[in-house]
Image 1 (cartoon, helix red, strand yellow):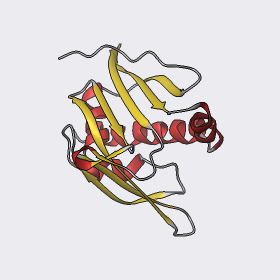
Image 2 (cartoon, rainbow, N blue to C red; image 1 turned 30 degrees about the vertical axis):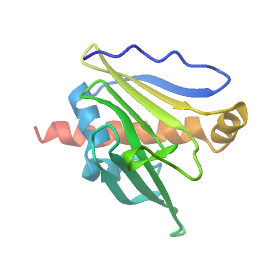
Image 3 (cartoon, rainbow, N blue to C red; image 1 turned 60 degrees about the vertical axis):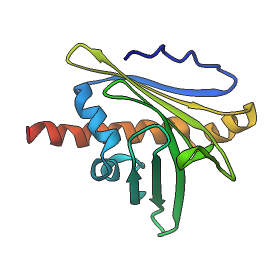
Length: 163
């Protein structure tokens, strides 16, 4: 199954796009396996306190981020689309089973395409209004998501070494 690539709206979407020197199957594993997500998903010195993945449309994607001071920040949502080794779409706008969430923030699209020996990685955060986009950018979207991607690359290289 192939899905058309999302065309970002600059007024509403934030996009991180990069070629990484990691095979697509390892990027997929890093995004879909809780024990891997726990290793890279938040920029250090933050850590992951918990992660729950039910990898199917309508299934749960829940994370709990922990600040260096020990404060925890849960995020609960669901997958909208799962195309193995190509595309993940998840949102906090809906809870598992497509139940409306009380405080929606954004929908994420993670796309993976072959690029030489590595992967073209495209992460898009879609917001309902320009204010939500600006708030997310002000929270450090590019630095945070970029750092997390660097951590994903470093983590997957340890996986590649054990193959």
